[in-house]
Image (cartoon, rainbow, N blue to C red):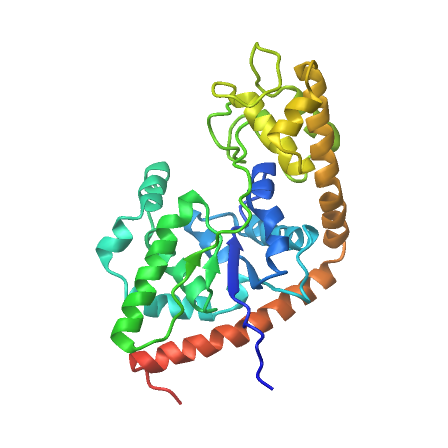
Length: 335
């Protein structure tokens, strides 16, 4: 009997361990990662090698890597269902990156806008890793023959580079890599700063009231939302020029599943005080189970290490297959 079951597509997602993500990171991306595993074979990586470009303090990097790994499990990613690993535990990433460096044109890498932006921000440390890390990102993706990669607007250029590298390698050496596509799934909201809602929420914002960390205390969350910038109209409605209220409506919609129309009806005749209190309660309820699970996991380091080890072993089995194929195709002497 013919097997009509279609092979599931592969999705790779990675996040750098540069501190605890914000509510914006969670609602815009991480919350949707859990749902992807229902329909796709998913790999989730803590991209610690990428963090080295800004020369982090070593003990802080180790701590933040474990915290980020625990947070991935805390949001509901299942290590039995998906492959969840730490990038540096799979040496094939670095090995393939060198092969791909030799298949990347200098001009292509020089055009990456993030390199230009970060060079301006860190003029004292414009290192080669900062220049070539989009090629390492390409290796991350191509190692696993990923069909899809969820990317934000700031990473679209890097995915396009990965596609160009894959196409070039396949043309020169024969079909080796799957050419990845951007993942178009459920679109998460673009969550803006609570104090300056024309800019995205960011944990690097110097004003701590502008962002909510996923691990903020409940009382801190309430205070931050109550101090969020609004306008003088005192009417809860989504409209141009109401950036603060639009942002709070987006947050409330993501946490409750309600449409903007339903939110406007719910708060008809009510002021911003009532609305902010409801938004704060919704955010607290959304993040509470994640925080509880995170703290439980962080108290069991042996379990986290076991999951990370198992995840790396599973990832390496897949990565090794692709690396050996690429090595053979490029003419490297194989034993």
